[in-house]
Length: 233
Image 1 (cartoon, rainbow, N blue to C red):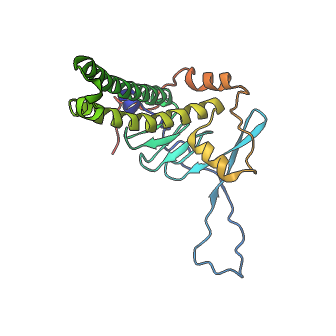
Image 2: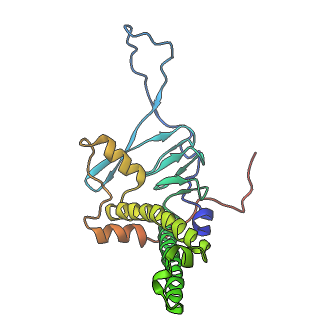
């Protein structure tokens, strides 16, 4: 959790393309009522990835052409490489440099929650069966009075951990499914909204094993943030 929260997700430096080439504004349609002046828009750039052509969007805030799979986070106010989403619980973006740590965190958290729920239920069952073995009339022993009443914390912990395990486990399952397709949450939402006009994913390796290896086993990239450098106000 700390590694995911404190790692630079892949913030792209600002001001690289502060003066981009612009295209002339289109001619105004005199029949339409427009009270806003036409502006020169930055010229679009295209890069070739495999057999697909990807257009690079210009970010007016960061003054850069966003690399492929890069998005601008409104909460962090930064362009982040391979941005998946902004996690409000970790107070950090989930991007190229910390996505693997995020997957490990949600997976281990869900396993820990299910294990806690199972051990709490085991504790209640042990109390119940020990009580039945200790009395002469086992039919007089009830699970509610002899187990739940003696260990209410285990009962509450079992329910709470089960709910959290289902919630976090569903999130982990969803992100592992995205990893099998080598897509981010942004790309998956765009694909769902633009279907059937969406083009093929240019980053798909063609197999589940190849996509998971590309997401989970790729070497970490260096951070562009120079934490010990001086800042200019």
